[in-house]
Length: 204
Image (cartoon, rainbow, N blue to C red; front, side, top):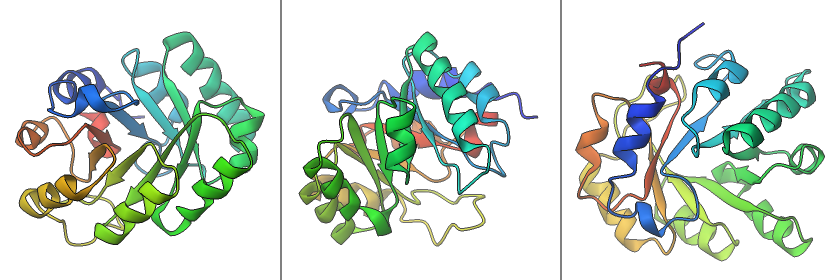
């Protein structure tokens, strides 16, 4: 399994970004992924205290057991723990909030209306998605892909200049996602990001 040893460095660099002080979420958000972070429990145990963790289970049969384990680790390590695309699971493990893929951002509005507690994040890939997230009661957005990414689903990256324009247009804190790793994170300074979201880059 990967050592997941880059989290501390990424967290320190993310905390130095211009918008970090204005977000209700930690500067570093780690996302789980079945292929690129195959051991989410080990990932959670290696994250620096005070980071954020977004659990994406993609329908895994052991998702309740894994989510409960992650929730326990998050509590002991003071991590902000969000569950993606599964309000029932988020409530079952008393998560700190929920994450919504871009195509499901409207579910955040429904969750707010029914009284779901906690912090909400949403994935965004462009201007319209950023505006929609703000209208749906989301607290922060993950804009992607910023830089070239190894993700099998990654499309052409936005690039820093285009991404910076979207950050200026956003009414919400914006986290950079896509191609975020120790070698690239310093390039984000000066573009208005409130933090970074990482997957494969957490492995070093």
